[in-house]
Structures are given as structure tokens and as C-alpha cells.
Image (cartoon, rainbow, N blue to C red; front, side, top):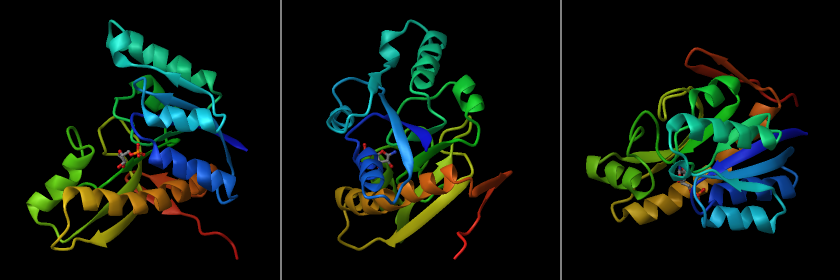
Length: 209
Ligand code: GRF
């Protein structure tokens, strides 16, 4: 089974969804490690409860960006990762990691990229921005990670219709349900070698029936 390391910064509900899919047999990977960008986040608790090795690599603990990037690379390699999943990870990955794991890093974003993505669009801000703009649909995107923020080739997207009574909080919750479905599916496709990237385009090799 392929080794997948999950990078987190928060509650870790997407991490939990990966764990659940592994446990119910719908995602055939080995979750080899969890790396958090700060201590005390609930995602670490989830790793602990499920016997997944975890580490904390916080930017504030390093004097320079270079030292942080190097520590992050070492932490990732220590897990034996073949693939990386950014599941609510709010730090920036160094270019060495991005290049070493080219086309092997997925990120989940709670909007339909390229809308409401990039620097500053995280958490409730994403959903508030969608409401403020007045869009009628939103959703979630799984994409490959490149050097930009939320700019890599898109793997899966799923949308929902915004209701007049939606708030940022209700949207976050409804979009989360989509995230918990499409992230495990994208990871599964990736580790099976069924995602083919050509420029910005990702084609999905369908399963034989
Ligand atoms: C999710 O909405 C994800 O799309 C975004 O950050 C949030 C993380 O939530 N990048 P969780 O930590 O997985 O619960």
C-alpha cells in the first residue's frame, strides 16, 4: 500500500474522513504520518487516537524560511511518504518539497477554484466572500499543488446551490460534506495512478467494470 502523509493546521475533519475511508476499506492507502503546522490542534488528537505517527513543524520555531523548509522536508521524509495530502494546511510548502513531490501532492479548497482562492482565502472567509459576491453556486475543489496558492491543476470539483438563508457557517458545513467525499476519492485515484496531468488538465482513467 502507498504511504500517504497528511498535513494539517486545524480540526482535521478531512483527516478524519481519510481515516474513516481507510478503516471502512474504501481507500487503500497507509496513512504514514500527520504533520501539523502548530501544536494543540485537534487534528493531532485524531492522529493520536488512530495510532498515526505525528509531528509538529511550526514556522515560528525557525529563524528563517530556509530552516523551516528544510525541517519540513525532513519531517515529511521521516514518515516515508510517497504522497502528500494538504487537508486544511495553512502554511506554505517550500519549493524543494513541491518539486520532489511534483504531481503527488493534493490540496482541498472549500470553493470552486479559481474563484475565492489564493492568499487570505481560508476558513469562513472563503464562504463569506462567496456570499458577499452573490454567487449562486459554490462547492469544493481538490487540486494538485504547484508553486502558487490554490493554483495547481484541478482534479475533482463538486458544487452546491446557495440558498437565500445560507450563512458563512452553514455554507462551511455543507461544503465540508462535499470535501469529505471528494478528498478520499481523489487520493484513491492518485495512488492508483489513475490521474494523468497534462499542463492544467487532469484526466481520470475510469475503472474497468
Ligand atoms: C477545510 O475547509 C479545507 O477545505 C480548508 O480548510 C478546512 C480544514 O478543515 N483548506 P479540517 O481541518 O479538515 O476540519
